[in-house]
Image (cartoon, rainbow, N blue to C red):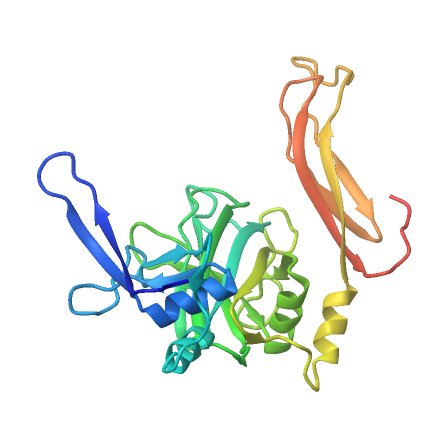
Length: 309
């Protein structure tokens, strides 16, 4: 039945030669610690410097550490007089996390290459950037970019800009995605990744190198309290998300192809036609047994009838 006390957590940088360098510290009051023990959930704490200012990381975001607390045996963790402010502060902390998964069908942006893609997310007046994926039309990020928001607060509109990085000169904008507050609430409720079409400045679909519509795959998570329940007027956005469906063809391989070239074997590619649309694979040169492992997809009406291919 002992009393819970204040805790400090120091984060250091280890140096093999010379003295170690302090990154910063976290101070957790006894009231906060009691609240964390009652919740049993992990909490993220900002790492502060010696002036009690947030330590800014390599990516211009606030450095933080995630901690979870458990107890064994008897400890006094019930609220005490004066704990209200600490409990309120913890309740006010919330986080909106954007998982930038991948992009597909990006256009050719560089004369001597393909596309060096990165994305910039703007939400509630703040900006987060992904890393750059060099020389690819199909970047895979798997990166988490998060925004600290008011606990219990309202979800707002988000924009995602996709850029092509240039080592010399200014970067070129591939296009943008605008996610309304209603769509974002629906995505947070589902917890599933969604693919969004990348649009140009005229709100037209950006067409990729392979003549398919460029798109980016995003998933959204929240930590803490955020208002994500449907609101009046959300029906259209929910219906639009429900209507989106996709038929994906994974072209894996071909075997035992015939000899097609006088001086070689076969330079194979395939063309898939479905519901009035066409998709092409890449060409596999000089082989009777091409391996593609490529995904070609068709956007279709959700709940619609499957057709001949």
